[in-house]
Length: 413
Ligand code: NIG
Ligand code: FE
Image (cartoon, rainbow, N blue to C red):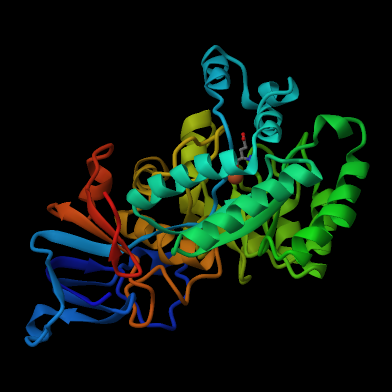
């Protein structure tokens, strides 16, 4: 696929190849080129610069981007898009006053999704999941992480992970798989958490590793779910099998999970709606990136991750959708970024850094995607004619995307 984009009003997130993540005050910087061109060759970014230097002898396809902006596709480092059925009944219960935790304690929540998932075939699960993947690609996502965790039995967890593998085989954007067997305690192990952790470590993990079904291991480290100690055990076991840790932590309570994540070199610690000074201290000078999930805060009406405290302490921050049936039934990353601006007081430059390059870093994909860099995949968003890039988040709820490209190929709108 060879394409020349010309007359680009502004080309965003233009980076040298050695910039893999941006932290602290550097997040306030978004390098751009106004009135730019961009050349895609064989699916990769081959050249870009000012229109003054645009090649005159181009013989392939040309896209005139007059009045439009180009940015790298969104890199969504935290999703649960493999699921079946919805939970709008719980949505109504919460409107009527029940909390997310109360619903979970009464067999709803993750267990509700697990019950539904157990019954469906792998084919049906694939069909529903691929529709979600196609939906988020249309919304500008060009790299994605997907978790298991609605299986909670050997068979059902493997079913989920095999669906993720099928998605990897059939779609040409980077997809990373995460084994989240420790998402909730299944009913069969209601009074036997030790037994379930044992099953995960000694039965499931070896199969996941042998069949190379996941790159990452995740745990929901939270009161009523898995303790910091359980988390440590699971991460250690995952590492032994070559899986890199990435955890759900501090969603409702700080129970020492961030420290465990750092101790086991987690690539990311996600949620962080509750953050203590000790957590910030623990994350400083580590390779672990905090990931905020504003869709979840918005949808559950819980606090937003204190982005300012994290960034102003010099840390990096990524934004992800958390697309799932319970706490964030949307994978629209432009909307996620808009929430980052409005609710977390992040600037448009910061949210773009958080949802592109830092999101790529949170999936170990920073060499492949996340910025306009020669040699990276041409996974791109071409906006409609808009006045400026902050408008993407200011005029919330409107679709500002003209077209999306994966490996330089225009996707069906
Ligand atoms: O990231 N917090 C844990 N897991 C998911 C939600 C799971 C669900 O409610 O289905 C999350 O928010
Ligand atoms: Fe999640």
